[in-house]
Amino acid sequence: MKLLQNLNYTYKEVDSYTLLKFQGQINQKKLVISGYSVQSLTFVEQLDIDDLILSFCSNVQFTEVPRNIFKLMCSNCSLQNVDGIQQMKQLTALSLYMNQVNNINALSQLTNLTCLDVSCNDVSDISALGQMVQLKQLGLTDNKITDVSSLSKLVSLQELRLGCNTISDIQPLSSLLNLKYLSLYENSIEDISPLSLLINLTELQLNSNKITSIEHLKSLINLKTLFLCSNQISDVNAISHLSIEKLYLDSNNIIDVSCLQSLTKIKELYLHQNKIVHIHHLKLLTTLTLLNVSKNLITDLSFAVQPEFDPSIFDLLIRGPQLLRPQYYTEQQNTPSQRQIFFSNLLSEITFTNEKKFQTEKNGRKMKSKFKLFEENVGKTVQNANQELIKMTNKVCDLFGLLVQEQQ
Image (tube, rainbow, N blue to C red; front, side, top):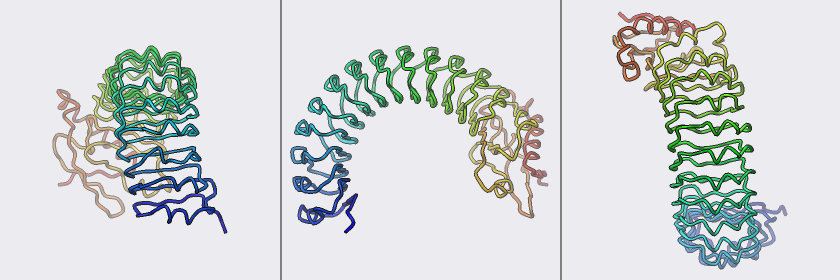
């Protein structure tokens, strides 16, 4: 008989007798129990498994978890404490995601743990983690942490998640030189100078903080993904020479993006909700697959109809309440477009202030779109820009082979 690798009991009334019928049929893999009131876990010891996953279970008692379990996930189980878990010294991975735990002192005795996730709990004191130098992955997202000084000795860490806390001082993190992934989003950070030594980082999340200067990020030569959205940044020169592939700069105070033309590896660039006026420099970014510059102050889209922009390799999406995608073009493509550019600046639904309606006809089918100028982005330039915008819109439509005629 073929041995089971996974056994999943979800929202079923099962007792130890039912599960023990599988004894000898499970080949050192995992047992998943979801939505079940756990009366006892002692029976698990008789099942030859390595991983135990409990989700939406009640009455979980760690004192009953068998010693043959190496990976334990206990999520959404309404846990308020981790009493007894210190006896499970064999654990190499532990997740307590989405519970109500506020004291993690017992975890300090789990000296074999290399992966720990205590995200989405009520933890404020993490001093118990200070001696767990064997940890490689640590998740502490969405807690009540203000002090991270106890993490300074965890030099084996490769992944650290500290988003959604109330951290302001990140100086203790400067010693974590092996970090490859670091998330610090939604905190109260202003000074990011301690990060300048973390040159092995490939992904850094600093969105939704109080950052004004990113000068100290220029040394992070291995960065591939960088989140800086929702801060107070105006100057982005410091990161213009990096090999970033995904860059999130939306919701800042950026005006000039000319320096970003040096991002020769960039694939996705998010610049929406800034104060950008000109983006013609970005036409040199030939590796781009997605560019979002919506909600800025852009008036000139002429770069989009330059000869170097081949319509066969990208879509121009005019982003507003709706996206106007020329249907004939998408129907001709067998695969999704390779390039996308998002706008909702002066243009919204490719529409103008005069509220004139235009009608587009292709292959006997009519597509109607209302033209209206997106006034919140243009302010006083509305009247002056109107005629130029009409010309540009016609060019954009021509780019896709559309025939635009004013509806009588």
